[in-house]
Image 1: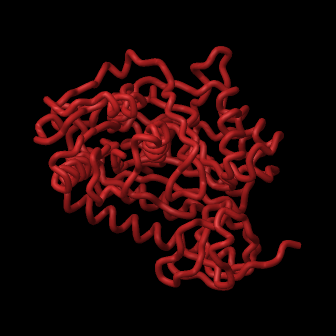
Image 2: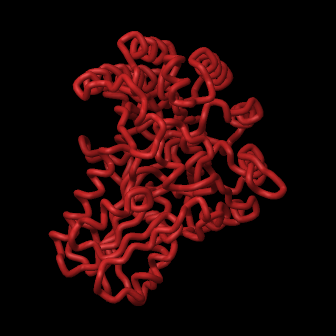
Length: 437
Protein backbone atom coordinates (compact mmCIF):
# COMPACT_ATOMS: atom_id res chain seq x y z
CA UNK A 1 0.00 0.00 0.00
CA UNK A 2 1.22 3.51 -0.90
CA UNK A 3 0.82 5.98 1.96
CA UNK A 4 -0.63 9.36 0.89
CA UNK A 5 -0.88 12.49 3.06
CA UNK A 6 -2.65 15.70 2.08
CA UNK A 7 -2.53 19.21 3.52
CA UNK A 8 -5.12 21.83 2.58
CA UNK A 9 -4.82 25.59 2.91
CA UNK A 10 -7.55 28.16 2.35
CA UNK A 11 -11.24 28.04 1.63
CA UNK A 12 -14.01 25.44 1.76
CA UNK A 13 -13.71 24.96 -1.99
CA UNK A 14 -10.13 23.78 -1.48
CA UNK A 15 -11.28 21.50 1.35
CA UNK A 16 -13.94 20.05 -0.94
CA UNK A 17 -11.44 19.42 -3.72
CA UNK A 18 -8.90 17.81 -1.38
CA UNK A 19 -11.60 15.43 -0.17
CA UNK A 20 -12.37 14.74 -3.84
CA UNK A 21 -8.74 13.86 -4.58
CA UNK A 22 -8.63 11.41 -1.68
CA UNK A 23 -11.98 9.95 -2.71
CA UNK A 24 -10.72 9.20 -6.24
CA UNK A 25 -7.58 7.38 -5.11
CA UNK A 26 -7.71 3.63 -5.68
CA UNK A 27 -8.37 2.18 -2.22
CA UNK A 28 -6.54 -1.04 -3.22
CA UNK A 29 -3.33 0.91 -3.83
CA UNK A 30 -3.39 3.99 -1.59
CA UNK A 31 -4.02 4.52 2.10
CA UNK A 32 -4.47 8.03 3.60
CA UNK A 33 -2.21 8.89 6.56
CA UNK A 34 -1.84 12.03 8.71
CA UNK A 35 0.30 14.73 7.13
CA UNK A 36 2.81 14.84 9.99
CA UNK A 37 3.70 11.15 9.52
CA UNK A 38 6.05 9.54 7.01
CA UNK A 39 4.26 9.02 3.71
CA UNK A 40 5.21 7.89 0.22
CA UNK A 41 3.37 10.79 -1.38
CA UNK A 42 2.49 14.26 -0.05
CA UNK A 43 -0.15 16.44 -1.71
CA UNK A 44 -0.18 20.13 -0.77
CA UNK A 45 -3.35 21.94 -1.91
CA UNK A 46 -2.25 25.57 -1.73
CA UNK A 47 -3.94 28.95 -1.31
CA UNK A 48 -2.79 32.32 -2.67
CA UNK A 49 -5.32 34.79 -1.27
CA UNK A 50 -2.55 36.61 0.66
CA UNK A 51 1.22 36.73 0.78
CA UNK A 52 0.96 34.98 4.13
CA UNK A 53 -0.78 31.96 2.60
CA UNK A 54 1.90 31.81 -0.13
CA UNK A 55 4.50 31.66 2.64
CA UNK A 56 2.54 29.02 4.57
CA UNK A 57 2.24 26.92 1.41
CA UNK A 58 6.02 26.99 0.90
CA UNK A 59 6.55 26.11 4.56
CA UNK A 60 4.31 23.06 4.33
CA UNK A 61 5.99 21.91 1.11
CA UNK A 62 9.40 22.07 2.80
CA UNK A 63 8.01 20.32 5.90
CA UNK A 64 6.86 17.39 3.79
CA UNK A 65 10.26 17.17 2.09
CA UNK A 66 11.97 17.10 5.51
CA UNK A 67 9.70 14.32 6.78
CA UNK A 68 10.53 12.09 3.79
CA UNK A 69 13.03 13.39 1.22
CA UNK A 70 12.29 10.35 -0.98
CA UNK A 71 8.54 10.94 -1.17
CA UNK A 72 6.60 12.21 -4.16
CA UNK A 73 5.81 15.89 -3.46
CA UNK A 74 2.79 17.09 -5.44
CA UNK A 75 1.80 20.76 -5.19
CA UNK A 76 -1.55 21.95 -6.51
CA UNK A 77 -4.12 24.66 -5.79
CA UNK A 78 -4.34 28.39 -6.43
CA UNK A 79 -0.71 29.24 -5.57
CA UNK A 80 0.45 26.51 -7.93
CA UNK A 81 -1.71 28.00 -10.69
CA UNK A 82 -0.54 31.63 -10.44
CA UNK A 83 3.11 31.17 -9.37
CA UNK A 84 4.39 27.74 -10.48
CA UNK A 85 7.86 29.20 -10.97
CA UNK A 86 8.09 30.02 -7.23
CA UNK A 87 7.27 26.43 -6.32
CA UNK A 88 9.62 25.01 -8.97
CA UNK A 89 12.51 26.68 -7.17
CA UNK A 90 11.97 24.48 -4.10
CA UNK A 91 14.29 21.46 -4.35
CA UNK A 92 12.41 18.21 -3.89
CA UNK A 93 9.07 19.10 -5.54
CA UNK A 94 8.07 16.30 -7.90
CA UNK A 95 5.02 17.73 -9.62
CA UNK A 96 3.20 21.06 -9.86
CA UNK A 97 -0.44 20.72 -10.95
CA UNK A 98 -2.59 23.74 -11.79
CA UNK A 99 -6.27 24.25 -11.09
CA UNK A 100 -7.49 22.43 -14.21
CA UNK A 101 -5.07 19.55 -13.60
CA UNK A 102 -6.11 19.09 -9.97
CA UNK A 103 -8.81 16.53 -10.74
CA UNK A 104 -6.26 14.33 -12.59
CA UNK A 105 -3.91 14.04 -9.61
CA UNK A 106 -5.15 10.54 -8.63
CA UNK A 107 -4.28 9.25 -12.13
CA UNK A 108 -1.03 11.24 -12.21
CA UNK A 109 0.15 9.68 -8.94
CA UNK A 110 -0.47 6.18 -10.24
CA UNK A 111 1.54 6.88 -13.40
CA UNK A 112 4.24 9.09 -11.92
CA UNK A 113 7.79 7.82 -12.11
CA UNK A 114 10.21 9.63 -9.80
CA UNK A 115 12.50 11.76 -11.96
CA UNK A 116 12.84 15.34 -13.01
CA UNK A 117 10.25 17.72 -11.51
CA UNK A 118 7.19 18.23 -13.69
CA UNK A 119 4.91 21.24 -14.06
CA UNK A 120 1.40 20.78 -15.44
CA UNK A 121 -0.22 24.24 -15.40
CA UNK A 122 -2.44 25.28 -18.32
CA UNK A 123 -4.13 28.62 -19.09
CA UNK A 124 -7.03 28.69 -16.63
CA UNK A 125 -9.03 31.03 -18.88
CA UNK A 126 -9.11 28.33 -21.57
CA UNK A 127 -10.77 25.89 -19.17
CA UNK A 128 -14.56 26.04 -19.14
CA UNK A 129 -15.20 22.58 -17.72
CA UNK A 130 -16.49 22.11 -14.19
CA UNK A 131 -14.25 19.84 -12.10
CA UNK A 132 -15.30 16.22 -11.74
CA UNK A 133 -13.94 15.99 -8.19
CA UNK A 134 -16.96 14.92 -6.15
CA UNK A 135 -16.17 13.43 -2.73
CA UNK A 136 -18.66 11.41 -0.70
CA UNK A 137 -16.65 11.57 2.54
CA UNK A 138 -15.20 14.53 4.44
CA UNK A 139 -12.77 13.23 7.07
CA UNK A 140 -12.81 15.36 10.21
CA UNK A 141 -16.11 17.03 9.30
CA UNK A 142 -19.62 16.16 10.44
CA UNK A 143 -21.16 18.26 7.68
CA UNK A 144 -20.63 17.75 3.96
CA UNK A 145 -19.49 20.37 1.46
CA UNK A 146 -20.81 20.64 -2.08
CA UNK A 147 -19.10 22.87 -4.63
CA UNK A 148 -21.72 24.07 -7.12
CA UNK A 149 -19.82 27.05 -8.58
CA UNK A 150 -16.20 27.86 -9.39
CA UNK A 151 -14.28 30.84 -10.74
CA UNK A 152 -15.05 34.57 -10.66
CA UNK A 153 -15.75 37.31 -13.21
CA UNK A 154 -15.54 40.26 -10.82
CA UNK A 155 -11.80 41.04 -10.81
CA UNK A 156 -11.78 43.15 -7.63
CA UNK A 157 -8.59 45.18 -7.69
CA UNK A 158 -6.96 43.36 -4.75
CA UNK A 159 -7.89 39.79 -5.71
CA UNK A 160 -5.76 37.20 -7.50
CA UNK A 161 -8.40 34.44 -7.36
CA UNK A 162 -9.88 34.96 -10.89
CA UNK A 163 -6.38 34.31 -12.25
CA UNK A 164 -6.15 31.12 -10.18
CA UNK A 165 -9.69 29.83 -10.79
CA UNK A 166 -10.71 31.32 -14.14
CA UNK A 167 -14.15 32.50 -15.25
CA UNK A 168 -17.33 31.62 -13.40
CA UNK A 169 -18.71 28.17 -14.12
CA UNK A 170 -21.60 26.27 -12.53
CA UNK A 171 -22.57 22.68 -11.87
CA UNK A 172 -25.84 21.91 -13.74
CA UNK A 173 -28.97 21.85 -11.57
CA UNK A 174 -29.71 18.15 -12.06
CA UNK A 175 -26.19 17.27 -10.89
CA UNK A 176 -26.53 19.53 -7.85
CA UNK A 177 -29.74 17.79 -6.77
CA UNK A 178 -28.29 14.34 -7.47
CA UNK A 179 -25.20 15.07 -5.36
CA UNK A 180 -27.31 16.44 -2.48
CA UNK A 181 -29.46 13.32 -2.47
CA UNK A 182 -26.39 11.08 -2.65
CA UNK A 183 -24.66 12.83 0.26
CA UNK A 184 -27.88 12.65 2.29
CA UNK A 185 -28.10 8.89 1.68
CA UNK A 186 -24.47 8.63 2.78
CA UNK A 187 -25.59 9.95 6.17
CA UNK A 188 -24.88 13.68 6.13
CA UNK A 189 -27.56 15.73 7.88
CA UNK A 190 -26.10 19.10 6.96
CA UNK A 191 -24.50 20.31 3.75
CA UNK A 192 -22.71 23.55 2.92
CA UNK A 193 -23.07 24.89 -0.61
CA UNK A 194 -19.74 26.38 -1.64
CA UNK A 195 -18.28 28.31 -4.53
CA UNK A 196 -15.73 30.98 -5.31
CA UNK A 197 -18.54 33.41 -6.22
CA UNK A 198 -21.58 31.46 -5.06
CA UNK A 199 -24.16 34.19 -5.69
CA UNK A 200 -23.71 34.09 -9.48
CA UNK A 201 -24.47 30.38 -9.63
CA UNK A 202 -26.25 29.40 -12.84
CA UNK A 203 -25.65 32.55 -14.89
CA UNK A 204 -23.44 30.57 -17.30
CA UNK A 205 -25.82 27.62 -17.71
CA UNK A 206 -28.12 27.07 -20.69
CA UNK A 207 -30.88 27.77 -19.87
CA UNK A 208 -29.72 30.07 -17.03
CA UNK A 209 -30.46 29.21 -13.42
CA UNK A 210 -29.79 30.89 -10.06
CA UNK A 211 -29.08 30.09 -6.46
CA UNK A 212 -32.68 30.67 -5.37
CA UNK A 213 -33.85 27.86 -7.66
CA UNK A 214 -31.51 25.43 -5.89
CA UNK A 215 -32.56 26.55 -2.41
CA UNK A 216 -36.26 26.48 -3.26
CA UNK A 217 -36.11 22.98 -4.72
CA UNK A 218 -34.15 21.59 -1.77
CA UNK A 219 -36.66 23.16 0.63
CA UNK A 220 -39.65 21.73 -1.23
CA UNK A 221 -38.19 18.24 -1.55
CA UNK A 222 -36.61 18.17 1.93
CA UNK A 223 -33.57 16.59 0.29
CA UNK A 224 -31.42 17.15 3.39
CA UNK A 225 -32.16 18.17 6.99
CA UNK A 226 -30.00 21.31 6.94
CA UNK A 227 -28.53 23.34 4.10
CA UNK A 228 -26.03 26.14 4.76
CA UNK A 229 -24.53 28.73 2.42
CA UNK A 230 -20.88 29.68 2.37
CA UNK A 231 -19.80 33.25 1.56
CA UNK A 232 -22.17 35.31 -0.60
CA UNK A 233 -22.08 38.92 -1.78
CA UNK A 234 -24.53 41.47 -0.31
CA UNK A 235 -25.89 42.39 -3.78
CA UNK A 236 -26.77 38.76 -4.49
CA UNK A 237 -28.96 38.13 -1.44
CA UNK A 238 -32.42 38.56 -2.94
CA UNK A 239 -35.70 39.30 -1.19
CA UNK A 240 -36.99 35.91 -2.38
CA UNK A 241 -34.03 34.23 -0.75
CA UNK A 242 -34.71 35.97 2.57
CA UNK A 243 -38.41 35.09 2.46
CA UNK A 244 -37.54 31.47 1.76
CA UNK A 245 -35.03 31.38 4.61
CA UNK A 246 -37.59 32.95 6.98
CA UNK A 247 -40.17 30.22 6.33
CA UNK A 248 -37.79 27.32 5.78
CA UNK A 249 -37.24 24.27 7.97
CA UNK A 250 -34.12 23.39 5.96
CA UNK A 251 -32.10 26.54 5.25
CA UNK A 252 -29.73 27.57 8.02
CA UNK A 253 -30.21 31.13 9.27
CA UNK A 254 -26.63 32.10 8.67
CA UNK A 255 -25.00 34.35 6.06
CA UNK A 256 -21.33 35.18 5.62
CA UNK A 257 -21.00 38.40 3.61
CA UNK A 258 -17.81 40.21 2.49
CA UNK A 259 -17.80 43.90 3.43
CA UNK A 260 -14.07 44.59 2.88
CA UNK A 261 -14.32 48.31 3.76
CA UNK A 262 -16.78 50.76 5.25
CA UNK A 263 -15.29 53.70 3.33
CA UNK A 264 -16.82 54.53 -0.05
CA UNK A 265 -13.55 55.77 -1.53
CA UNK A 266 -11.80 52.54 -0.64
CA UNK A 267 -14.73 50.46 -1.93
CA UNK A 268 -14.47 52.27 -5.26
CA UNK A 269 -10.72 51.67 -5.44
CA UNK A 270 -11.35 48.00 -4.63
CA UNK A 271 -13.85 47.86 -7.54
CA UNK A 272 -16.64 46.65 -5.27
CA UNK A 273 -20.16 47.18 -6.63
CA UNK A 274 -21.89 48.71 -3.58
CA UNK A 275 -21.36 51.56 -1.15
CA UNK A 276 -21.42 51.65 2.64
CA UNK A 277 -25.00 52.97 2.88
CA UNK A 278 -26.34 50.19 0.68
CA UNK A 279 -24.45 47.58 2.70
CA UNK A 280 -25.68 48.93 6.05
CA UNK A 281 -29.29 49.25 4.96
CA UNK A 282 -29.36 45.79 3.41
CA UNK A 283 -27.86 44.14 6.49
CA UNK A 284 -30.43 45.85 8.69
CA UNK A 285 -33.27 44.75 6.36
CA UNK A 286 -32.07 41.14 6.55
CA UNK A 287 -31.74 41.33 10.33
CA UNK A 288 -35.26 42.72 10.73
CA UNK A 289 -36.70 39.97 8.54
CA UNK A 290 -34.69 37.26 10.35
CA UNK A 291 -34.07 38.40 13.95
CA UNK A 292 -32.17 35.20 14.89
CA UNK A 293 -29.90 35.13 11.87
CA UNK A 294 -26.12 34.99 12.32
CA UNK A 295 -24.46 37.41 9.92
CA UNK A 296 -20.69 37.30 9.62
CA UNK A 297 -18.61 39.74 7.58
CA UNK A 298 -15.13 39.94 6.07
CA UNK A 299 -13.17 43.16 6.52
CA UNK A 300 -9.84 44.08 4.92
CA UNK A 301 -7.55 46.62 6.56
CA UNK A 302 -4.62 48.51 5.11
CA UNK A 303 -5.74 48.73 1.49
CA UNK A 304 -3.68 51.35 -0.41
CA UNK A 305 -5.00 54.82 0.40
CA UNK A 306 -6.70 53.78 3.64
CA UNK A 307 -5.95 56.68 5.98
CA UNK A 308 -7.21 57.07 9.54
CA UNK A 309 -10.48 58.64 8.39
CA UNK A 310 -11.20 55.77 5.99
CA UNK A 311 -10.38 53.21 8.68
CA UNK A 312 -12.61 55.00 11.19
CA UNK A 313 -15.45 54.90 8.65
CA UNK A 314 -15.03 51.12 8.53
CA UNK A 315 -14.87 50.87 12.31
CA UNK A 316 -18.01 52.98 12.74
CA UNK A 317 -19.94 50.93 10.20
CA UNK A 318 -18.97 47.61 11.79
CA UNK A 319 -20.01 48.96 15.22
CA UNK A 320 -23.45 49.85 13.83
CA UNK A 321 -24.12 46.57 12.04
CA UNK A 322 -26.26 43.85 13.71
CA UNK A 323 -23.73 41.09 13.08
CA UNK A 324 -22.53 37.97 14.89
CA UNK A 325 -18.83 37.92 14.04
CA UNK A 326 -16.07 39.55 11.97
CA UNK A 327 -13.21 38.02 9.97
CA UNK A 328 -10.36 40.52 9.62
CA UNK A 329 -7.66 40.34 6.93
CA UNK A 330 -4.74 42.71 6.40
CA UNK A 331 -4.32 43.72 2.75
CA UNK A 332 -1.65 41.72 0.98
CA UNK A 333 -0.08 42.78 -2.32
CA UNK A 334 -0.67 40.26 -5.11
CA UNK A 335 1.42 40.64 -8.28
CA UNK A 336 -0.83 40.82 -11.32
CA UNK A 337 -3.68 42.67 -9.59
CA UNK A 338 -4.66 46.29 -10.24
CA UNK A 339 -4.21 47.35 -6.60
CA UNK A 340 -0.49 46.71 -6.62
CA UNK A 341 -0.06 49.90 -8.71
CA UNK A 342 -2.07 52.09 -6.34
CA UNK A 343 -0.34 54.79 -4.25
CA UNK A 344 -0.73 55.23 -0.50
CA UNK A 345 0.77 51.98 0.80
CA UNK A 346 -0.06 51.36 4.47
CA UNK A 347 2.71 50.48 6.91
CA UNK A 348 2.69 46.91 8.30
CA UNK A 349 2.56 48.14 11.92
CA UNK A 350 -0.49 50.27 11.09
CA UNK A 351 -2.20 47.26 9.50
CA UNK A 352 -1.48 45.21 12.60
CA UNK A 353 -2.91 47.89 14.93
CA UNK A 354 -6.06 48.33 12.86
CA UNK A 355 -6.54 44.57 12.58
CA UNK A 356 -6.35 44.21 16.36
CA UNK A 357 -8.91 46.98 16.89
CA UNK A 358 -11.39 45.29 14.54
CA UNK A 359 -10.74 41.81 15.94
CA UNK A 360 -11.48 43.08 19.45
CA UNK A 361 -14.72 44.59 18.18
CA UNK A 362 -15.50 41.25 16.55
CA UNK A 363 -15.07 39.45 19.88
CA UNK A 364 -17.57 41.83 21.47
CA UNK A 365 -20.03 41.21 18.62
CA UNK A 366 -19.67 37.43 18.98
CA UNK A 367 -20.19 37.50 22.76
CA UNK A 368 -23.20 39.81 22.49
CA UNK A 369 -24.84 37.65 19.83
CA UNK A 370 -24.33 34.43 21.79
CA UNK A 371 -25.79 35.83 25.02
CA UNK A 372 -29.07 36.58 23.24
CA UNK A 373 -29.77 32.84 23.05
CA UNK A 374 -29.35 31.88 26.70
CA UNK A 375 -32.59 30.16 27.71
CA UNK A 376 -33.74 29.63 24.11
CA UNK A 377 -34.09 26.20 22.52
CA UNK A 378 -31.51 25.58 19.79
CA UNK A 379 -31.29 22.65 17.36
CA UNK A 380 -27.64 21.57 17.46
CA UNK A 381 -25.80 19.21 15.10
CA UNK A 382 -23.28 17.30 17.23
CA UNK A 383 -19.70 17.33 15.90
CA UNK A 384 -17.21 14.49 16.19
CA UNK A 385 -14.69 16.80 17.90
CA UNK A 386 -15.08 17.49 21.61
CA UNK A 387 -14.68 20.86 23.31
CA UNK A 388 -11.01 21.36 24.17
CA UNK A 389 -11.64 23.14 27.48
CA UNK A 390 -14.27 20.83 28.99
CA UNK A 391 -13.96 17.56 27.07
CA UNK A 392 -17.73 17.65 26.52
CA UNK A 393 -19.43 17.07 23.19
CA UNK A 394 -20.27 20.15 21.17
CA UNK A 395 -21.99 21.20 17.99
CA UNK A 396 -23.39 24.09 15.99
CA UNK A 397 -26.88 25.52 15.83
CA UNK A 398 -28.38 26.44 12.49
CA UNK A 399 -27.44 30.06 13.20
CA UNK A 400 -23.80 29.10 13.67
CA UNK A 401 -23.53 29.22 17.45
CA UNK A 402 -21.05 26.83 19.03
CA UNK A 403 -22.87 24.98 21.82
CA UNK A 404 -21.13 22.79 24.44
CA UNK A 405 -23.42 20.12 25.89
CA UNK A 406 -23.05 19.09 29.52
CA UNK A 407 -25.24 15.98 29.55
CA UNK A 408 -24.44 14.28 26.22
CA UNK A 409 -22.11 11.54 24.98
CA UNK A 410 -20.38 10.49 21.77
CA UNK A 411 -23.32 8.36 20.64
CA UNK A 412 -25.00 11.64 19.63
CA UNK A 413 -22.38 12.54 16.98
CA UNK A 414 -24.08 13.47 13.68
CA UNK A 415 -27.46 13.79 15.40
CA UNK A 416 -29.45 17.01 15.74
CA UNK A 417 -30.60 17.58 19.33
CA UNK A 418 -32.47 20.35 21.11
CA UNK A 419 -30.39 22.22 23.67
CA UNK A 420 -31.28 24.94 26.17
CA UNK A 421 -28.15 27.06 26.84
CA UNK A 422 -27.86 28.41 30.38
CA UNK A 423 -24.47 30.13 30.14
CA UNK A 424 -22.05 31.67 27.66
CA UNK A 425 -18.33 32.39 27.66
CA UNK A 426 -16.24 34.05 24.94
CA UNK A 427 -19.01 33.63 22.39
CA UNK A 428 -19.57 29.95 23.16
CA UNK A 429 -22.81 28.63 24.71
CA UNK A 430 -23.16 25.93 27.36
CA UNK A 431 -26.31 23.95 28.09
CA UNK A 432 -28.17 20.67 28.40
CA UNK A 433 -30.16 18.56 25.99
CA UNK A 434 -33.89 18.99 26.23
CA UNK A 435 -36.11 16.10 25.13
CA UNK A 436 -38.01 16.80 21.93
CA UNK A 437 -41.47 18.19 22.58
